[in-house]
Image (tube, rainbow, N blue to C red; front, side, top):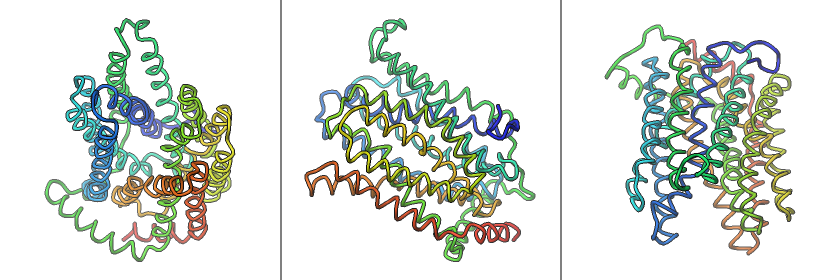
Length: 430
């Protein structure tokens, strides 16, 4: 494989990026696709729909809060022990096993389904903390934008490929020797676990974490990690550039996640055809693959910050388009627009942040980064819900999300990247 500049991707880089191909199957097939539907129709069969929604909401919220609380702590410990790869594989292993176990849960056993899903989601999210922290080890000097984009691109492609297969599997189960759609969904859960495990093998075999000069082990690493975490809380108050970026990122990524999570609900609210919307979701995945690669190249040419701002501009345009949308084909256009910038904005945000933090504390700092990611999609859905209820017009709710992109973009404009990079290098030498 070669990036857009024609130079071959090294084994170290590719083994890191393939993990995104591996774990994105969970994000598409389980998180966004089958688990919410199967939970209502099978595991919570006979329950009131409002009760099952509450149960699923509690499971998602609990997992997100657990990861948000643990991420900075685990990141700090991993930094001091030099064991980011080991922690990644530990959490990924838990996610893989728990995802496979979903196929064993019988109808009506929603408490067991919630319990297993909770730990699968913690495994998935926790592993991503350490995956992001290994970006600096994966990227050759000067190519961090493209390497970050390569990971997101492979994630969209890999997640989309398996999700497409699983959709076909559930629509035509008898063609695959399965009795019904229920059996097909259970096979889909197993397929995600296998896919995730198999495509994590290159990371296990080929990726080499840059070793620490004096790694700590056992309880010493835990104590040093907590001490480092306390110091970083203090340091963040004096790291103006990093602090400003994190606030900007939290605002605009909340908008990004709101569009991802609420677009389907919004389309249904304004009366679009539900059967065609799932096709639009697949379109977003496959458009996201080349678009994320292209954004990596754009970041190299004009800089990560201007490229992110351009992506946020597209999101603003997409919100305006959504307000005037009347036909299903227009939702496909909207899905294509989102696919063009979704991966790029996330990839370049990760790459820009990696430049602004000390390399020897990347696990801990990416713990903070991922913690904010877990608290994203709170303001946006709340804004959409309040605007829709108060005005009685759901179309106005999509326009309200623009404030998150504008506010986040305005703060990002104030981020002095050169100052932040110089400060990060100075801290890394301490």
